[in-house]
Length: 198
Image (cartoon, rainbow, N blue to C red; front, side, top):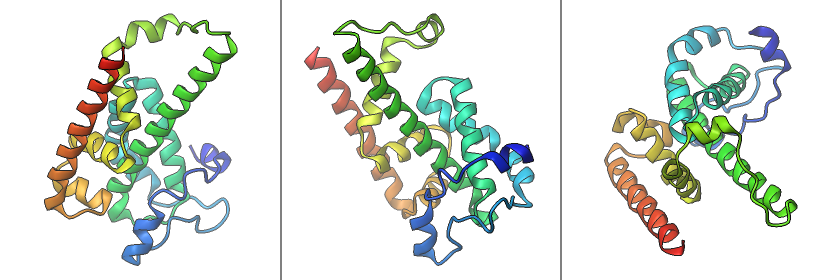
């Protein structure tokens, strides 16, 4: 695992930086080049199932979610995020990274379709078996939501409590319910808009 950490670049180090700076906590930056946190293994063992679950909730694919989790933990391993904030930071990083993965995939599919002179590129058989049309529609609609709403919705429906979501997104616990309800409403609107355009 240490070799993987040494090879990883600081691709996601900006996640959570604004929150850490607002709270006056240590910014999410590497302590020194090549340094790995001493608490990484402990945090990894305790938080890995939740990080994979959050990414899987967004992506609908366990193996892709595990790749996202690895990327998130590699970034965390080089960060200065306080250990007490690791759970929330990792959950938010997993949701952001998974949403970025979704958006990148959608752009790639559009480019492939355009390159194929209007011919639709057929997904491989594994993807066709795993995902249904309904799941695709929901994920596409989720990717179109404002980022904070999408992350709040994913975190809440991944089993995080209102207090955990509030801490992860730097919200007051009382506003989490409102944020999640607005996100659910926006998601329904996106789904209805897409259904009416078909």
